[in-house]
Image (cartoon, rainbow, N blue to C red; front, side):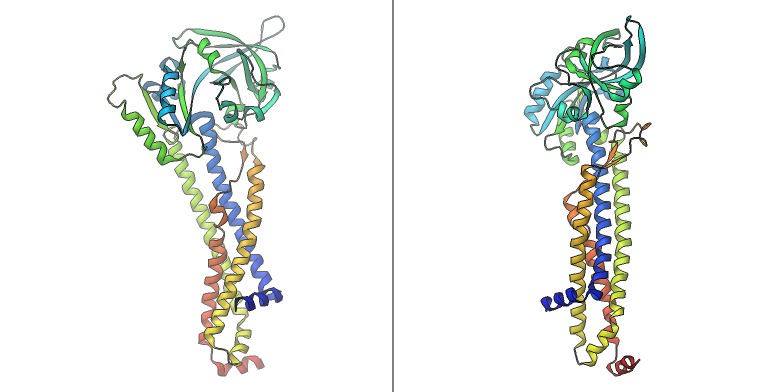
Length: 424
């Protein structure tokens, strides 16, 4: 019977083409919207984790209370020993030390006098370590605009936008003026070896990247670190696992009265990200839910109209003696075939659009120029497992339900009145 109905749908385009096109378009929109919201949420987590929060972060208790001020006088000491312990105890995470700092960058002219001076946000990471993943994690190689990566001490990267604003070029000497961990003035000369575009507006406005050993020397922080970040090696953040590791780590220092003792926090504990991610996730689910309901109503109406338009055909079949339940079942089977075909076509095209947005995205650099949110300048979708089946919810179910309700009228029709309808 299924084979017979399928042949009928293929041969009779008036009965199948329009419903399949509507179902396909609705499923396409549903798939793209879900993937886009999923991509934005994932991108927000990924950008914050790579550049700022990590999936887990360790700081001293005092540093945590004043983290926005980057108080390196309250930073961790003995970072190498602590990271060795963390790598042994939590091998699924990559642990790396970083130093955040602020200061002034002074660009001299040919006479050694100040040509330009601007505040700078600095990030010191492990650039030269044999097993370090920091270059890949910060995407420095692909983000390079001019010059090359640092290859020796005292070489730095600065953002391309920052370099243009300060009118400095590759190979240009530049002086960092900052504060040591003991509160004294720190002055150190560096060489600009390259410029990068991070793709994050907060960083592109004025950031420099250097090796952590240079800043440990400059800020008088031997074996010190502002923070130690832990990032899952498979790159997927698991909130439940992170919370469990945080509780386990902090339990070892729960009775410590020393404010310099280490404290572990998760990504959601920082910068109000927990509330923000919950809000974005909730809003995203509401939007997808409303869209699913809207598309379901449209496709439900399509199923109803399709069934109603076929009452003449149903009348002929009843007049010829075909059983009502048989006609009803055949209409349900047809709606399933139409819904399934439309859902498959719509999902395929929706995944193609989502894949394009995942790879190329939409550039919103101008919109984020004054933003302080750590998010990418490129809006991208993200295809997940749910992207492959989310469109089938309105595509298959709504069409079937619409036909179910419209088909009920079959059992209310009287065979005696059919001849009058046929004559009309």
